[in-house]
Every structure is written in structure tokens, then in C-alpha cells.
Length: 281
Image (cartoon, rainbow, N blue to C red; front, side):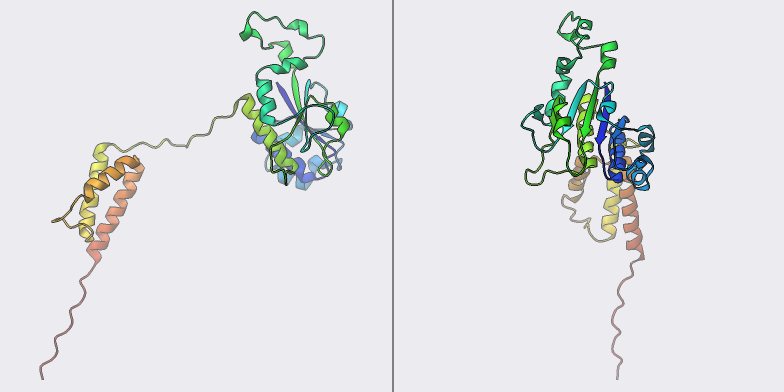
């Protein structure tokens, strides 16, 4: 499904850049500005700085004069507003609405004339495919920073998204609000996988742990921490500690390095000088 973010009458150039950055982090790139304050807003220094590398989103962004132009190709419209309107679409949280869309209830908003394209053989087949899916587009509309969206623009939408926030201080910066919506929509579409570490750590085997413990035992004796005549259960306890920790091979190297430094410190230590005997008179 095509996703478009529409900013209406944006007055701060930095917010346009922040919006582009928020979109790119969630994998979206269709940005349309409706009558922004600055005609050259996409090229302003503050916009570029706040985009923080999302220059491709800015490059592909379009500026139009009217909301009608921005909505071309869109079949489901979501307004964003902190407070509900007396009339117009229902006010819902983004997650609630997106969950509804993920259950294919968006079909209720299929444009007239396309219903005949739906032919279901079973419940599993009740998902639009082919040309119909290609014609579906969802647009998220954001109003100007000072006044938000006008009632007229909200009334045109199928839903009014309200981000759950502190009722005593619920106003979000435009870029922050767009980031939340983009994140929730990305989750609904299918979230990106969490990136794994560049190198998967390899656990140390029992032989490596035993060799490290033997090294530590010698080093602890050398610095006087372990009495070899009365070791008690220090080494078995350390063995259990490292077993629970699940140390890696790299960590074994670090622990051996510490033991080596203890050995060197102990070998360099000199006995304190004894007091000189008094001279005989």
C-alpha cells in the first residue's frame, strides 16, 4: 500500500527536515507539502540540517498549492489532532486504527466502482490483490505548527489519529508526532528486524574456562588473596560464577590478561626494608 505524509501550511523549515528524517528511518519517502510558508523550504539550510542525511526524501518531496492536489491517488485519509472534533471522523489511537486496517477493514473505504473486483472464495481470500491493492493509498495529514488542522480538512478524513499523551501536556512537535505515526504504521505493515551485532560472540568451552581458572588460581596465590593451604571454596565458587555468566572466548582472553597483570605486579613487589639495628656505644 502506498503511504504518503502530507504537511499542511508548515511554517518552520526545520520541521520539514525533521519530518523527512522521521520518514526515512521508518522506510517511507512520499512527502507532500501543501502551501508551506517558504516556497524554497526544501532547499533551506535549516531544512537540510534537520533532515540529517534524509536528502533523498527532500529531493523527491513535492510542493503543491492545495490539499486536493496532495490527495491524488489516496483512498484512506488519516488526520492528526490532539483533541477530538464534535463532528467528523472518529478519534482513535494510531495503534487501534492500524490494527483495524491490518484486519482488512480498510475494504469498507474501497472507492465506488471497484467493489466488483472483489471475489472471495474463502475467508483467507478476502484480501484485495492485483490492481485493487495497487490503487489503495493511505495518507497521513499534519496541520500547521500553531493551529493544527482545520476542521474542514479533518472532516475529509476517514479517521482522526490522536497519540496517547499526557492530558495536561499533550502537544508534540511536528517532527516528533510524525515519527510516532510513522513508527506505528511501520509496525502495522511489518517492522524491520532488529540489527544483530556485527560479530556473533562465541562461548568459551569447558576446557578454556578451566584453563583460565587455573591461571587465576596461580595469580590469586601470587598476590596473597588465596591461601593455598586453606583455599576453602573460592575456586569452585568462581567456577560456578563463570558458568552462570556464560563467558565468551574474547572474555576469557580479557580475564587471562588480568591474571597476567596480577602475576607481573606480584613479581615486581619488593619486601619492605627492615629497620636498622642501633649502633653500639
